[in-house]
Image 1 (cartoon, rainbow over the protein chains, first blue to last red):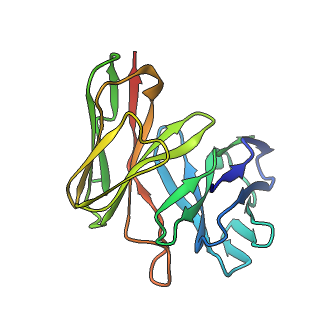
Image 2 (cartoon, chains in turn red, brown):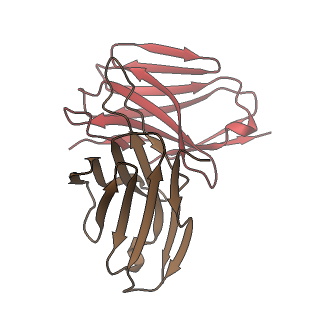
Length: 112
Length: 117
């Protein structure tokens, strides 16, 4: 069945770049997503990439998509303490884009 | 006001009790979802609905039921709560599958934390 895998923890220092990796299984997913969850809050869409793109840049965020390897990454440049959160990779499943399935989430810890 | 509102935000109950978590939305979306979040397990889909007459099971529907009372309301029930249903529950909405006209993203409520003793 469909599955999304990502590492559980990442620790970086303020000002460094953070790279969070994800692998997925459903090659028919039209979009792939990165969500951010801050403590005590719900998930908010951080960014997304259309499946026919290799890269998307949005300010400090860079998303890279390797469809051949089904690998997605999120790079955060100049990481700040406010970026500390859980980051979820997600893909859509089903021919009708039935729902999103999520990875287990990567907890990013940023130290000053 | 939040676009997706969940009530209650926190609930502590005892084993065997019936619990209902409610979700309402002002986004006008047809699609609504219930997910469960457990530490280290990410989000898992419980039920989803594409309109008032459409209810579908997700990957972990056992022990849960849902009701879509209106386009804007989708409630999740635990008929007889058990301790391993202790989790953070999220309601989400979507305006459709990802395609040329929309991204298929989900919009989440703030979550309902349920503790079953």
